[in-house]
Image (cartoon, rainbow, N blue to C red; front, side, top):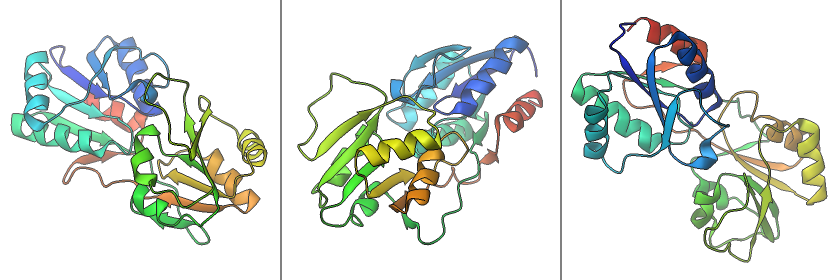
Length: 245
């Protein structure tokens, strides 16, 4: 790694924290952006800010202004819009780019698959008590709601607009254990789980708990990485890649 290299870390995953911690220890130049506070797993070991590009030109201006020479995209697996903009901007500006994506979970029957939150919402049965780990931003995709109640996981209370009548927030900060998830589903009398296929071990307990309890489970497919991008499966792979630049 040349001392003059300046890495942009797109954060939003547990892997981003591992990468930032190692880079900070190495003394390499790195700064991070995070789409929203709820994408955080705690403070990053490098300088960071809450920001996401609104357009390709927005992304390119930021990269040029900050003197970025490489992008390590360890953002949330479902922030594909940010990844696509970053990858395109990197290609236009001649910067190195790699997407960090852990392997997804295998989804076999009786689990159901859906291509999006809206497609998952269409599979909700009348009267269902649904637990969704899809983020507050997914709420419009559940309306009109066919079930009895939608329990939506959030990291904590916030000052945003009121939730619809059919929604009840469930506050909690990951990671959760299988036992904790089973207890929660029992307490709320959940019969349906909707979650995103983010892959990895930390996010899996809710899926294993639902399967163990025989809940109807709908798993949303992760978006594809940017076309032609280098995809790395772990923080270790990302650090090795950064070391070659």
